Amino acid sequence: MKKPRKQDFPVYKARRYLEPGPVVLVSSKWRDRTNIMTMGWHNIMEFSPSLFGCLISSGNHSYHMIRNSRECVINLPTTALTDTVARIGNCTGSEIDKFAEFHLTAEEATEVQAPLIAECHANFECRLHDDILVDKYNYFIFEIVKAHVAPTPAHPETLHYLGDGAFMTAGAIVDRRELFTKVS
Amino acid sequence: MKKPRKQDFPVYKARRYLEPGPVVLVSSKWRDRTNIMTMGWHNIMEFSPSLFGCLISSGNHSYHMIRNSRECVINLPTTALTDTVARIGNCTGSEIDKFAEFHLTAEEATEVQAPLIAECHANFECRLHDDILVDKYNYFIFEIVKAHVAPTPAHPETLHYLGDGAFMTAGAIVDRRELFTKVS
Image (tube, rainbow over all chains, first blue to last red; front, top):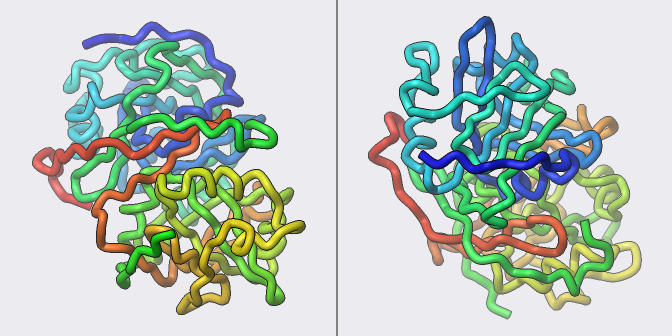
């Protein structure tokens, strides 16, 4: 499968890809084992530092790996990976090696031990910034410390989970810049 | 403008509309004044209770109204309201009455004092559930206590903010239910 060629991307602009609400693949590494989970409950929280909050249920194998390593990578899949995204969310890393099972390429990250998924459009390396809500809500607040983004296509066809096994895909772009007093 | 006819909707299913990451309009009321803000940084956190986290910057007029009233309504606009969504996000309720300015209809809510925006596809009445992150991150954790949703269209054409004055709109639906071991 195609591996988009990526460029460094300013971390404070991560919202460009994550604010629209795509399903993401979360990759992690702990004690020489890697894992991947599908995740849709997330939230940009700040531009700089680039903060990203998300819910990782304690029932997930990834929860313990990320809690222990305090790191992960948020990978942005597109519709080319629809089946893989669904399948990854419906099996557990306690039983299988998801990179091998789904023929995904683990690439070395720059700032964290967790691997990038080469087949995704963008990869955001994350370090745990605040664990204050982990016990109470399974909510992790990460800092995005490094971002890799494919420059094309400008508008990747992302997947947005609706529940019940269905996804909305990214549609047309509408520009209303002329209505903005200050653009951010 | 059209006001969709709505039905009661189970609050634990609110993720159906909010998980895909749409821009929402947040309506509030404090001391007989109402306000509306545009917001895109939010996160479903739990099915039941139906928890919804979101970032409301302290620079917003709505911040103080919601902090004081501990309530708001999350309203789901569609592309029919694109210009209004952009304009609401580019002016302040300290200077104008946004319902009047933008010809929006304030409807009475069931469980909170803040008004519903009748022109939106769905309205989620929220009560502040946990303010633990309000001081540190301007992050509010609400419980959705009542939901009103228009039954048609099944897939409203929502807006997803990209930054720089541009929105992605909702695209095609893809169903992968056959790949899900348990559907939620």
